[in-house]
Length: 143
Image 1 (cartoon, rainbow, N blue to C red):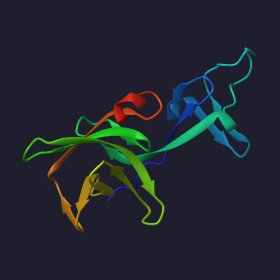
Image 2 (image 1 turned 90 degrees about the vertical axis):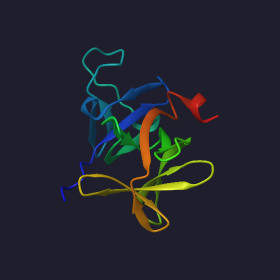
Image 3 (image 1 turned 135 degrees about the vertical axis):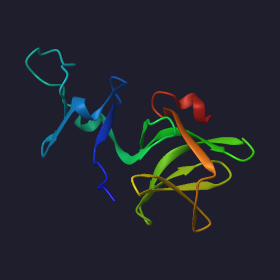
Image 4 (image 1 turned 60 degrees about the vertical axis):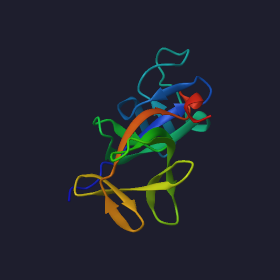
């Protein structure tokens, strides 16, 4: 099994802009963008208190799109086509990501270089997961 790639994206609460991993610099002093969004043409824009960091799960949805914490995903059952929308969250007690939908919880694992779904303690492939947005840019999707 290959190691999971560790990377983040950041939502700027003030400017309402999403920054991808290749646009960020992180050090012990804070989070910076590599794009210039500041008034000073010679300085990188400092996010720090304005930034909400979201971790990449290491997993891809059915279309090959990266799945991040706070993404909104459609969980579709392959057998009957029923679908629900949920938010990708981190479970601290179990140290794993999951999708919280209204009637159940879909546990996501990074294993065998692909997305593994757990249901009742067993791995299953009966769901298709598709990212349709995130809670910051598309909050209307979860209302």
